[in-house]
Image (cartoon, rainbow, N blue to C red):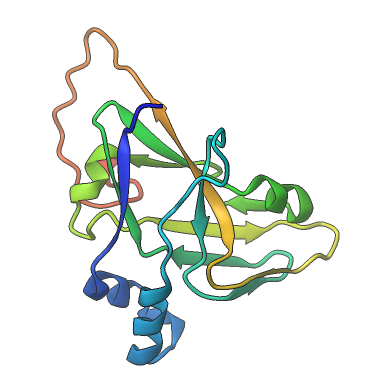
Length: 169
């Protein structure tokens, strides 16, 4: 297998700034940060890198949560990281990413927010099932895919930010 990326934690300061709306103390944030697990594959032939919850959360049917994962990823220029819910959670709870598939481009790593990866989820259960995820439990997965460009590609923009930052006018 070809190595194309490296996961890292964002700085404590970045993480702290992104979890302020959780209504927790700085000591609780420090504990969360300490417990962040970098994504890993579960088996030798897994395509997906499991992404782990930095804190406990629950979602009742119809509820949404934005999760600051505490991780970032340095990715080779001709690859991107695609994010999905874990297959079993999607199957059992209709757990969905709000943007259906997350795409983390290689240049996101250098953004002002350190390339902090966020995942926004909705429990779209139509069977009344509530979802409970504990700290350190895998809830999403990321897969690295290579991509190409057209012969006449002239993209020369510079990213600074996340969601929709490259199409802002």
